[in-house]
Length: 352
Image 1 (cartoon, one colour):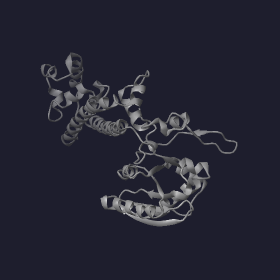
Image 2 (tube, rainbow, N blue to C red):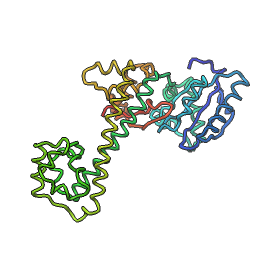
Image 3 (cartoon, helix red, strand yellow):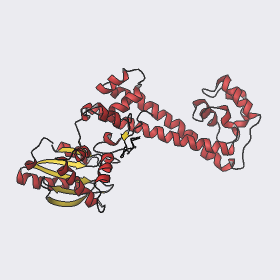
Image 4 (cartoon, helix red, strand yellow):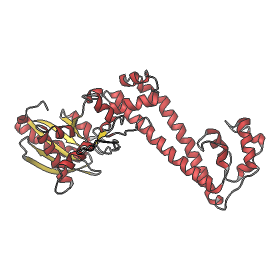
């Protein structure tokens, strides 16, 4: 940290879902104040007024450390930077390693808030503690937008996978043999066929002339459907599961449309303004989705002091897991979405 210790006011926050624990202290280790705030405007106002009370009194500059796990720190993280304070992310992965070496006697939100002040103090002398606190750099707005858009797309894709899995399980239970005519239940022609009727087992009685009128079916798939119709069988549960199958099929179609629209109308347009995305998409094997997700998650390359840090962050390298004579590695664990640094705790399988 480049600031003189004598002029720093240090603030640590343990981020929760509805309430946050805060500790304010000095480089000497003295704790000036501890309190809780609610995740609402009044709580944010109380947070900044307490900081300003201490910083203005002594002329201190302010550094704030907070966890970003699961995004609960938003929008307070942005407000911290708008106030001109230095913002540090408490890296959850490295914090866990730190706690293994320096375990505490107990755990509570208040203790965790104090832990941030300890990390500030130790980081002046101990490299391991300094690695836990990572300053959040300014990020180009287009990459911030890409981060939100691509994460939205990822959630829609994951939801579609869950719905398709449910659809396939129900079809296997009440219409054994039907899925044999398609490689994927999410194929557009198959969903169009499934949704061309209101209930099951009506698909077994559709004539060829009607099949050919269903979008994307055509003669090839109509022939497959006719082959299935000759041996079609429906289980006893079909009467009450049929509605679920139709609902899941319709949801698959809706999700696919939303995913395509998000990519075509928003993500690709914003990616054109991103320097990182443009560099990545120029490389062989990188498409619009992968390059946009990476640009959003990386934010700014200045966050990484060396190539190894970027590789580890993206899940392209492993963590050292050696002990004594044993030399080994372990895969980086996914820590979930985060707030003041969504990227510092992002998925290691961004482009999966």
